[in-house]
Image 1 (spheres, helix red, strand yellow):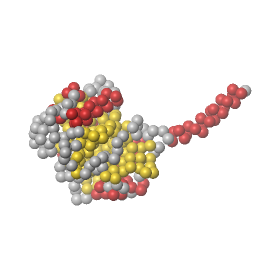
Image 2 (tube, rainbow, N blue to C red; image 1 turned 135 degrees about the vertical axis):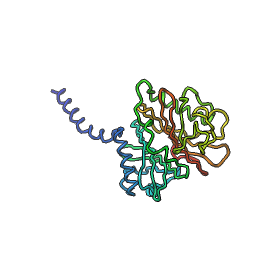
Image 3 (cartoon, rainbow, N blue to C red; image 1 turned 30 degrees about the vertical axis):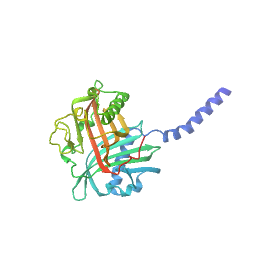
Image 4 (tube, one colour; image 1 turned 180 degrees about the horizontal axis):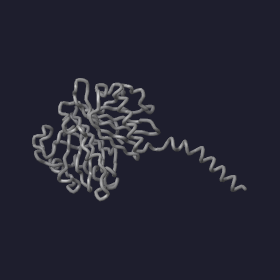
Length: 286
């Protein structure tokens, strides 16, 4: 009888505790994707008050602390293309969005939302509204980034993290690991192909690929505040962030890069890199 009473009490207790546990559970992939969709809709509609921000949420755009209502998103009238990625383990959903502003100007926007307990605790926006955004390579968004990787070519979460950690180390010591790169790897900077393209107009790398473009003496480095914001083994995606120094110059670049990795090698890189004076920190160091 005592055993039966204890069992009933335990079952009853679980019935009361499970709903609370479920409400605090991690937001899974579809949940994160829906949050990004709603964020975009509210930014376009200028209804930032509807975005579920946590108390003391940290919001930064191009490394500067802002209120969402003051974001450059205010000038956006429509979205032309987007690539959206989710990582329930880290609680991040990250997107690269090509958009059009009033007057028809094309901009490229990277946005990271961090969620906890159904609230957004961090908003990190990289907003490129410069003259070199190249719409021809951004619309539609390249499907190579969103396709599922076959099991034969898929890397583990740990392997993907190691590859991209080494990539950022290569921006500092300029000793990239050759086997981490597919010879066909190309890197795009806001839609401009800067590898295997002597006339890219952004970097002077000649016909170099992703590996060669960072090999030997370079004017950039070190890369600081390196962060892995997202890992998606099923799609072979890693999203990384860093502050890239240029010697003693006061100008630094915050980089937000989406990597596609096939067969353990970097195959494509989609970069939003914003070069400015006065950048000291991204504001996000974990």
